[in-house]
Each structure stands twice: as structure tokens, then as C-alpha cells.
Image (cartoon, rainbow, N blue to C red; front, side, top):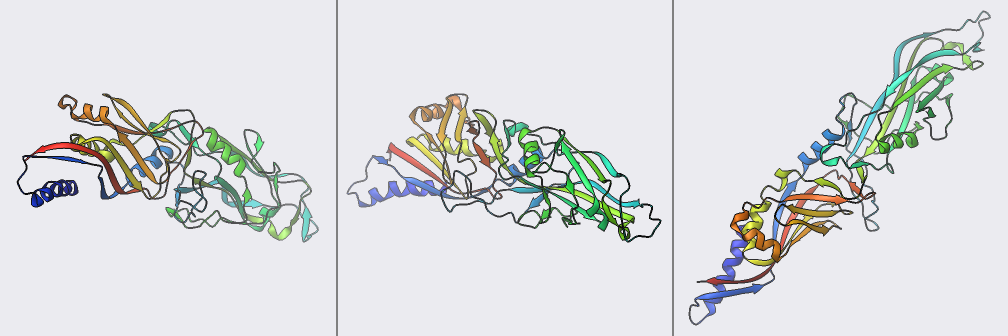
Amino acid sequence: MNRILTFLGAVLILPIMFACTIPSAINIIGNPTLTLAANMDFDDMLKDMKEDIFANDDFIVMDAVNAPPVHLRYMRPGESAFIQTYVIPIYIFDDDDLYIDIPNPFDLPSIDAPWEIQIASGKIPLPSLSFEGFLEDFKFNGDRINAMLYISGSPLVQAFTMDLRIEDKPITNDGNLIRNRPSYPSNIDTSEDAFLGTRLPPNGVDVSNSIKKVFTDQQDLEIDFDIYIAEGQTIQTSWLGDVEVKVQLVIWLPLILEATKDEAEMEFPEDIFSELGDFIESMADMTNIMVITLDTNVNPFAEGRLILRDDGFGDTVNELGGSKISFTLREEHLEYIRDSDNEPFEPQLFISFNEGEQMSVPREFRITTISVDLDLDIMLDL
């Protein structure tokens, strides 16, 4: 506001300095642009979004702080952005106190399993994600969701057969059972809040296709697992005895959301733009049109439309794109705002998407500058 007053002061004072007589009034006409530095972040909004989505406290959710930038479909060639990404590690089976033995009367170094030997079976629920509140009309886009299965423990695990299913369909991408996998742990420290890798650890079994479906269909599902040693499987006798087995599913989950219907709306929390109405009111008497542009470090809403909503004049709809969030108030809007009967002016801000349009949540989202374009034509008495 100080910059606005400085600008108007200069407009008033300079003509007076160079005039022969002091005028009684001055007509100000022009199209100035006022650019104000801003340092507004949306950390609280992003935190609320995470809490809304991951409402189930039964699962560990780690922040993938080193997730690499990705190129999104609305970006120009060469552009990329850091997307908020999470890693969810889930133990399907974890037991370090198994004892497995097979009769070996001839003390052979290796034997074939004389029958099927059951190791473990059961069910484990997958994360139940909640898209409620301001995200209720969205779901995860599955294009960049990855998931790997890590099998580790004692050497005997490489003799195991694993049958893991979701809705009676094999979890593996190729639809096959998992057989004879060497021990490859994920080595993820689940006691930490942050995951430091730039991708999921190597040497896992790719199960991305099945897990993508779970997240994009928004269903509460379980993994049925059956772990056993198949009849006839060759086993080194040195592997028998005390056995440790870990089967861990790890999910790589970028927050790229997709609208599930036309006119799916996400409302900005009221406190983010609590002073916006006061600012517009202060400028309404000076201009016939007002274009407010928020320059951001990245625009997660580029595929949508910005809606300024007020009960008095309805919705003003503005297309978005690039790294700018912009909306226009025309003469009919400003006339309504100038009317003291309509005070205070407390608009709501929404982003609207049509079905299939995407919103990618950036790792860091902030407003860098606010620009106001005016169409001045005012008469001031001196």
C-alpha cells in the first residue's frame, strides 16, 4: 500500500511543481502497473492437504526430500518441477523367529522338499486414503506411482514361492508367482521422517501396475499373501534351522491429482487471502478495471480455472497457465464493491478443473510478486 500512495503522490505533486498556477483539480488518466514484492508460502495448506489424504495413522508416510524434478504434460519442453512425493513402506510379513527343518537321514548337503512346506499366509490392508474436504472431487493420477516388493532375510528365502494377490489377481506386473528370489532388503530406515533416495531402492519386484490401480480406484483393499516352499524345491541343508523373513512393499507416491468430474473445485483456505478483499476495496474507487496477477515459483493449477466467487456478483472465471495466477475485475464488479452496502468484500477463491485435468502439488509453492494493472480515470480536487 505504501508504494501505491507513493505513486499517487508523485502523480499529484509533479504537475503542480511545473504548473504556473496551482490547479483546483487534477484528472489522472493512465494504465499503471503496480508490482509489489511478496513472500507468501503455502506450507500450512500443503500440510493440511497431506493430513487430509493420509488420515490413517496405521501407516508410515515418509517425505521423499530428494525426489527429482519431473516434466508435466502442460509444461514447455525443458521445463520441470519438484513435486511433493511420499514413500510408504509396508511390511507384508516380518518374522525373525521362525524355525524350519526337513528330515535328512542321509545328511545330504542339499535335499528336495518332500512336500509343500507352509511358511506364512494372511491378509494385510493397503493404505486407506481420504479425499475429503477441499479435495473430495479428486483422485491420484497413477502415471508416476511406482511400487516395489522387497524380500529379504536368511538364505532360505531364495527357496520360497510367494503368491500375493489383490482381489484374487496376482500383484506382480507379469502375473506370475514370485519364486527363488535372493535376499534383497530395501534398507529403508522407517524410524526417520525423510526418505533420502532419488527413487525406490533397486532389486525389488515391480508391482507398480497393481498398486496404481489401488490408488486411482480409491478402494479399501487388502493383499492376500501365501508364502511356502514348493514340493520338490531344492534346498541347501545349511539354510535350515532358525530363519528370518521380511517381505516389504514400498510405494513411491507423487502428489499428482486428477479431477473425477467436471467443475471439480478446490477452495483456498480463507486465511490465505484474508487481506485480499481489503486491498481490492481500497483500489476500487480509482480504476475502471483491475487485473491482479500473482507470480509464483510454479503453478500447480495450470490446467484449471481460477474462480473469484462472491454472493453479490457471482463467479468471475479466469483461465490459468504458465507460472501466473491471474484474475480480472471489470467495471460491473467494481461498482458492486464500491457500494458501502456490500461491505465488507470477502470473496472466496477456487480452482476449478474438468474431469481428467491434473493438479500437481509442488514441493515448494510460494507467491513471489503481486502485480496490479489499473485503468485510471479519476478527478481529484486539490
